[in-house]
Image 1 (cartoon, rainbow, N blue to C red):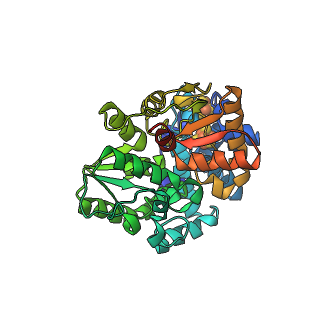
Image 2: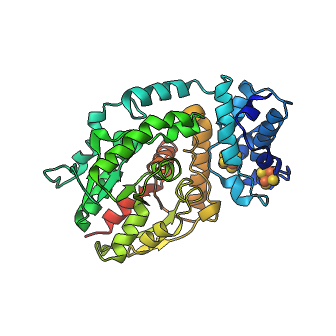
Image 3: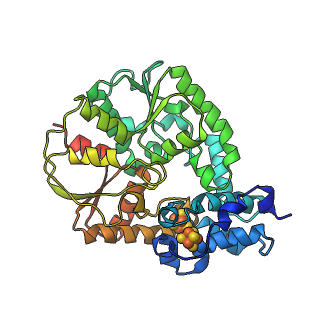
Length: 381
Ligand code: SF4
Ligand code: SF4
């Protein structure tokens, strides 16, 4: 019996793919690589043929399967609604079982198990971003009990380029009088990178730990600035707490009059829907609601927006496994921003800020990338 059958991968699901090719122009990796194996249809064929014992998984299937960004754009346009991203991620589990997976994933697993974060940093430095806060309260946002837990996530905690995201979010909540806490060194990686690595079963310890810490704080709401943490908690954690992405939380603060956006921001700006926030979590309108509340901003939509948004290049662990593909997808994204005449891209994800920001810097492209939290801070006097 083929390994894929052992994993009980849904044959019915992959058999729904009628090979029409309608998804091909929507797949960023197919556009970049121009090869069938790097398209949704090609990847579905790999999965199907493996289930049918017509194909052995090997280093070639490894490359095709692990270069998928997990963006889900293929499903958004597929008339048969084939869940290609889910099939590809299940296929990754099978690739792992037979030993054909990017070896960088082994280092990732070791790091997560030993250091509890993706970058092998000291957990004590998780709240380093607080140095960016002008008026840090005495408790440094670390309370024993609070109504809200702000779950910061690894990337925004440890990567200097995006540490202003948690600093801005904490400042917004502070100014709105929200009773919130962070977990500091007790926050562990949510485990999202393991899902993309084809090792979701290794999530258990992280899940148990984080759930306990939130329960200890007695919080009824958890707020995330990272869409992937939000998505992981929503789909892989079992909790009664209200899970909210920062854009939803901020939109509510504006509606309730807890914060006022009264300072003009003069710019032509567009919004990039992060895949894990938009298409993969269904949150499209709240970020736009917040952006439209900013006075002075000239807002323009990208031609491919909401569920048809194009990935920034930062998904699916591809930045780690094939940085060239990641950078070229980011370039495509920035080209589309230029096409609508925007000088500023707002998004709701630290990974998108990093991917597009790095590309803009390296390519000397005159486009600013900001997280929603930064825009909100700019608009508060
Ligand atoms: S995934 Fe959907 S759109 Fe793509 S080839 Fe298969 S049936 Fe057609
Ligand atoms: S999830 Fe994205 S990168 Fe992966 S096959 Fe679908 S469109 Fe292509």
